[in-house]
Length: 389
View (cartoon, rainbow, N blue to C red):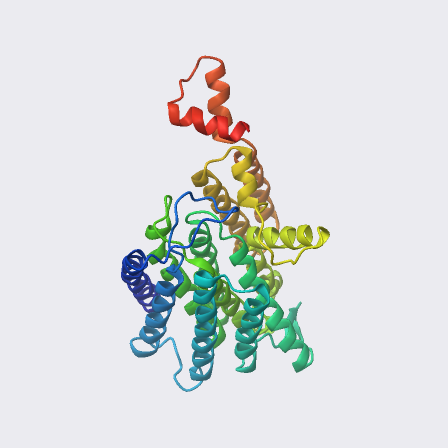
């Protein structure tokens, strides 16, 4: 079965890469790169239609999973697959229009709610919440609302953090790789389940899409994924989360793994810790200022890392480091069945991440230069002067 997942991920990566090359050429030929905005970090107009290529990669991966593997039960999973295709098509359509025309935030939010609602209506929803070795089952209406809220939250959290070259693609690779590992461990423990396989399929697909697009998006990016790509990644991550959360019966687990019943809830939050933190801070900041929570500004976490003196690449790697540390610590709860080693990893990794975050390399170079231990080039001097201002 692992080969089937690898095949799907490879198809997604290959098709996304080929489509990205084609979309980039067409964008340059038709001059589809938008004008620079005040909050943008890049300095030259850059196409934002990479999400189109990622959507094509997703479509190819779904076809490959259905035709060439046994990962999809064509009878039982067909409605969910069609629902995912419809929801992703809606998100892609609105995302493309927004990347080209800059749509009103209310219209984008309405499309996100409609896409999440379509998925919840077709059964991709939280049906219960694990608690100990039992399940807490709420009303169908509450489950529906909770699912739509969760999916919309994750989509916007991922989209909010998309502000630096390679940031969302790299975080998606790390987060979904960890989530995929978790699904395989969970499948080995429970003997396999359709919802777990489906979650693993979505995670593998996202990894493939992100891997195929990252070469075009790495610093200095030739193309951005735009709202289309970021919202697609967020939606698929939410789908994989919901496919496990609330559909795993803790009673099917070894009773030594009581903590594991909480992992479907904890792990998605852990792998999205940085995007969710950025989203929460942005919403609170804008509401306090009397603005729309979806209005754009230049005070996201990645902007603050740049203002601290980190280069764009350093800021991206800091996000990678935090995501990997939090995800690994959470995953260890499942594998070790205790909180001791996860706490050790979290404490040690947290200190390391804080040191890296709070010690910008440019300031270290400036300190060494002031003491005659290093000579900066003209471009580095110019960068230092800009940061000092």
